[in-house]
Image (cartoon, rainbow, N blue to C red):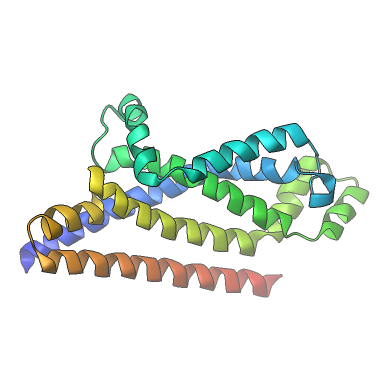
Length: 220
């Protein structure tokens, strides 16, 4: 029992490390990309700086990256992990492909959330002399905040699932524990414990996300 608790605790810490850092990095990559996708869209779609060519190029890149199965993308990005971190195995190495895999999803979430903002609010800000940058960070982002938080919550949940898959190819964490100790060594208790912890993590993230969205909606 003590051994099981030690294994699960260590794997949970690794999973949290992967999810936290990959969430931060995927937001750093996906947020500006999502904003660009929104503001460069056609004026009829809410774009404040319409640029059809740039929008289509960015959209194609995002769609291509989103279409990659995560396992394949992780294998493809092994050399990048090795260049950045000096290794392609382990928890830290998995953060690189996790971040890149989640970034296109984050970009689309950000784009969709910003496009939900009432165009009347944007037009009002323009009529008051606001610059495009001011419209982005003083109007679009604050107005879309509930949707943004809901999207980020969904991103974190997806990353928990991705991190479990990363364990299949040496990424560490609960997925690695479930495969190496649970499946390969026929330890049903390890497998069940790993699944239960993953379910708890997902539920905690969802509940906290829902509460934050509800609180933001009340402040509007």
